[in-house]
Length: 553
Image (cartoon, rainbow, N blue to C red; front, side):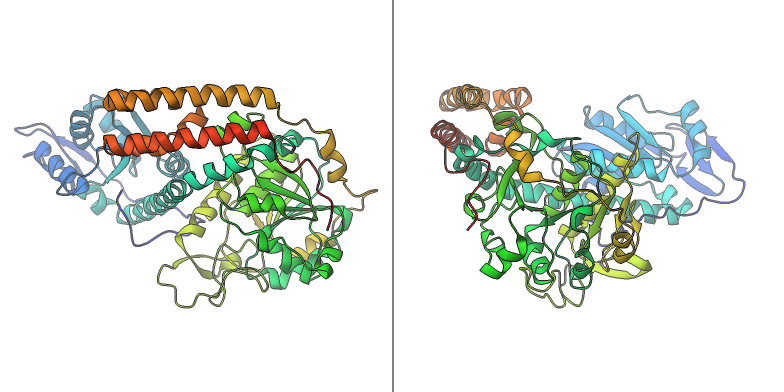
């Protein structure tokens, strides 16, 4: 995908509309009609096809690169560039932003485009949503970005905003894809090791909409938590504090006991959760440790917590859970926010969710993570209180996730209020900025504390028999693909996609096999998938240490 050096702030402001009366002229030429808008030539009447071909060559690069599955276009014109792309790549999808509404009627009456796979946007907010769907989260192949020279000249401010917006979403996509590719195998290994334990732990998605509508404080370990943590002490029974595991020790150091702690890391971060006797005394007896089913096995062995699980992907939820997974942005803060929303808590209040550097730091005192001075990867974004702060590509993806979550929630029938009470960091679009002390002081009194540990034993557990049957079926499919790959690897490669469509778990399990570039790599990937599914089935059948509750240390 194309890369951009500049990235817009998460809070996107569209450029002003072009001013003045302009006349669009469709001018006949020897090879097709040209288009002139005011004094700007959009399509050269002398050779519009050749001009469009040059645009496409420039956008694709001299080698052409990977076959594009999506074309993100700035300006329809008469559609020469769209038509040439369609002829070259018949399955390509078009996402077009038209910055000059006056030209829509011209396209409708004079277009040379013969295709139909086109999504047209004229509103910036609609474009953001479309880019999120088609660029950030889509796995439909490479995107080519194209902007005709005439449109860039006609609407320079709009083109700059378009380039920055598309660049931001491409960067988010690359971060998500890189994380998925790097961690998918490790998550599956963890899942195989954890499967026995999961049979004895409740799926926290069973609490969907079942908790009273109390405020939820979603606590991250950003640097501003040093200033904010003390204001959480009076929350008590008036709300629920859900904290990332990295924020646990900073909170305890300020005398704050969270109700829920979340961990989803694939690597061993259990040290974040292992407490001294003094810290355990502050935490108290009622804290729930919410664990991703594919997080590191060591997280399941930490004493002193009640435990429940959630699933990070639809595939894992299909194979080992209720079929419901927790949408999140790849970190514990986003998972805590999603869980609070699913449970029915309201309002949702972010604390310490800086998503940015402060004095070279990304984390609060006593949180894991070292200070990073002069990081060359930093990106300037708009901060809370109209400041400007520095972030990096990974946190930019998280910022985008929170903004999209706010937009999605706003479309529901009775959306909860969303507050960002982080005392510093990046601005998050869709969240009201407010002082934490003011919100806590305004909390209404309640009769009793919410007893989450008391609810857990009443939640259903996975059916070991059903899970075993599903895993046996998946194992049989993988084994058949292994044998087929040795006889006819091309046919096996074709079958991979079919099975991925049938089962999301198989799609996740066979991800490396789909990416294999030759027969040897394909066989090795399928052998590995076979080993993982066999280990998962054996672990689930044998069971493991656990159950819904661990004795406190």
